[in-house]
Amino acid sequence: MNQAQGYLPVLRNPNFLKLWLAQILSLMGLQSLLLLAVILIEKVTESGIQTAGAIVAFSLPAVIFGPIAGVVLDRVSKKRILVISNAARVGSQALLALLAYLGLNQAIHPLLFVTLVYLTIFITSAIGQFFAPAEGATIPLIVKRQELFAANSLFTLTIVAIQVVALIVYVPISVKSFGTVGAFISLAIFYLASMILLMLLPSDQVVRRAQANGESALQRGWREIGEGWKFTLAHKPILIAILQFSLVFTIVSVLGEIAPGFANRVLGLATEDAVFVFAPAGIGIVIASVFIVRFGQHLPRYLLPIAGMCFMGAGLIGMGALGLSGENALRTQFQILGFTLNATWLVGIAAPLVGIGIALVLIPAQTAVQEGASNEIRGRVLTVQLTLANGLSIPLLLAAGGLSDVFGIPQIVIALGAILFPIAYLNSKYVQSFPPLPPSTPLHSQPIPMAGESAALVEETNEHARKSANGSENYAERARQSG
Image (cartoon, rainbow, N blue to C red; front, side, top):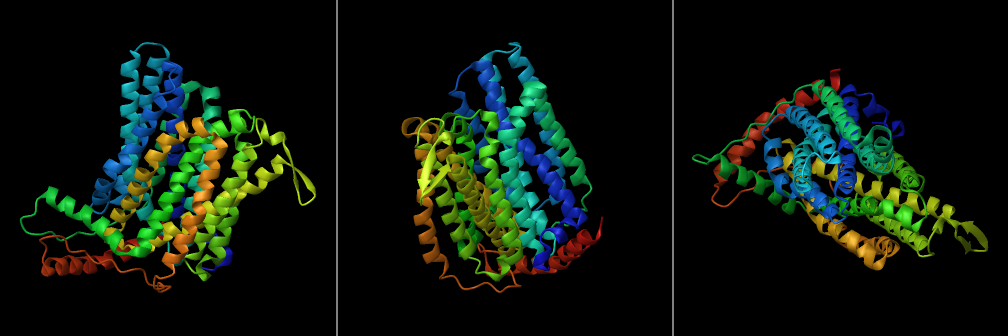
């Protein structure tokens, strides 16, 4: 791919375009769900403590179902998983709309209402644990290898942009325009439209895996879950990429949680006006994404995430320091090198730095995982990534609200930025010891022997995977040419 062409080659691919549009719609539903549920619970119960329960219900399924999703993903058609999971989420959002109607009209006991809402959030999030890795594993099947940077760049840009748009723009506007019940119905419509787009994708072939004689389905499932984790731990570049992804995922999640309070209590804005503060971060993501697509493949792979952590750290410290000036911080003026700057200018500088850092970490990390794991194990490796990211984020998400009340939101933002610099330094010392990857050859995925397995069984599985490779390549070529 000519790097100067940027996103045009992948956007001209009709199947990638369908997958990307489906991603936008499904993300709008997923990212809006938690905040809508918190608003609903607050309206019905008037109890702020219920927020923690909603966060746990939303995040815990990644830890429980992530490994299971990886096994299913590597054994079932990815298109089928994408379509069925969205169909199920249409039903779950319709159920939440019904619960919202009953709760707001006091037609259901508050305790039963909260329990059912938590359960529905849990189920919706659990379904998403199958959708997200299936979506990620589909990208390498429908785009060329040299276009992976552009494809992952666009997907990463979309993830962060939709998180901002959903939390800060769509949810407040939809609740004001359609009411809480109507807002949940709109999420069901998003999932329905996404499902229709995914149904138009070509079918993919499933790589059949050899199994040990006398091995039960449960034993085979645990063995394959172990293969995903052992493969990840055995390939240090992939493990580091997953940890980098998890770090940024956690920080972005915390920022999303405290963003309304930062805009309202620190900057003196109405919650619905927070988009004007955080939109510059989206500009930074766009700038970094374009840079990565055009020049990223010509730079040392380890350098981009390290630079990204430094950019994020500087931006977060800048935004946090702005909040230390007191209430209505946007009206504060600063003297810098003899120039008098309004705080709005500092937000316009700090927020894009955060966005640049997010893109510089996430895009190379996601690409490294997709390139380093072959088709027969990629799904399980991607679910390891999601499991770790969500598992690490849950404690910090639960603690962020209380810590911000004790120490203050600006102090929390500064602390998030400060920890990135020592992490970047340690990362730079560690990853430079890795041998360079060949530019056109991915890390080779070998089945990893488990306890009690013979070398013959491992070789049999590997031979079967090699025989399936031609079928996977034929699918990828057919997917690129169809449409």
